[in-house]
Image (tube, rainbow, N blue to C red; front, side):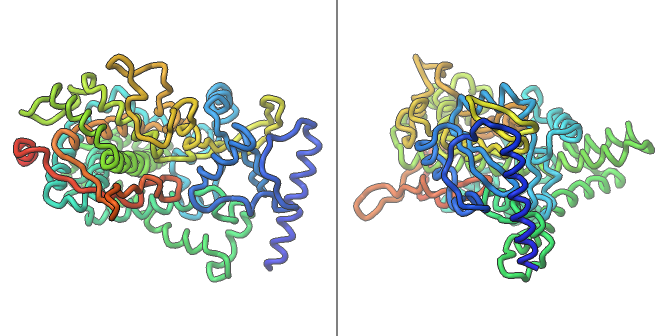
Length: 507
């Protein structure tokens, strides 16, 4: 059986090679030399691939070609190339590859992973209605309340600060979408959603699962040697299905019982009942609503948490940044209250810290891969139809031409004369994706990160844990490998800035 499958795969690869050779006389972009038949399959890095790709960019340039069976891939490590292709030619570069792992886990309901189609537009439109820049102010009260609850948790158990940050962003999104009150991370649905997103992250690592190159392997039983991908999918599938369906079905029942509290899910369900009940569109519209609410946690909580945790590491390593931010907070906010969104425009250095937190250890280092919908040519190179396109956001955000000394945490790089410098490339133009596939949850995520940073620095001091030689423990380079990358550990000591600050938190 295995030999048969391997033979089919070889024939498929040969067919693809012959077809490509006939279609264009232009060269493919440069890249590492592969092996006969299997191409670059053995070159794909399993740990922190964005750093390996960054090294390749230094050798081959801003656009690299990888010969992978069924999935010819280009890696973009240059902002110029990304803008030229993913922005200026977004009509050709906005599709998505349908990953076998997403299908096996049932993550294909995620609008961020859907092919570029009318179905995706319908989902995107519904999501955008509730998370666009003009709507997110409605959620500020939730963000402020949960952020202040987070500060109390930080005082009560500072050793669990990283977990409290995760709970903060989880509580915000689940309150907004489902009116769930998350008082601790042991809440049943939280564990379900976290496991579901962990599966998405592990399944989305480019090159990690051979089934993506030979989809016929998805039919083999999980007990076959080498079928780790199947065991992975079997484990995570129930969590993904529960994340999508359980809270939505509960709110439907609460509406029937007459006790559903205000939330995005309730608003959507009642609107669908009013407009589409009994029509042929009812089932279709409900599926869109179920999918849109089900993906909200994945779209906001994990990426915001990653950026906030990176901020904590940075503050433990860069005390001068922390002190400078606290001077600004004392001047703008004062000692009699906590920061809120009305302070945003005056807290310029805090905004710069938020930008640098997203740049320094980007949460989505490789973004979500695009797919080319037709043959294309760029700078004399041939880019075949159906090529996977990966934007190496990590490499772009660590480009020394745009960000000198990119390994250092320097918020000042975004400032000039006391204001944000419009001439410095904003990480927001890279970290949230490109073109028509830019993350629709970016506005809520940015607002939550700003408030978290301002609230923490206004009330708490963060100090590093020291090595035996007196140097701070630095874990900034220790990031998990996955679609979403987060710090693996955060060594620090926190304490209230003052008795007054502690009283503000307790009150």
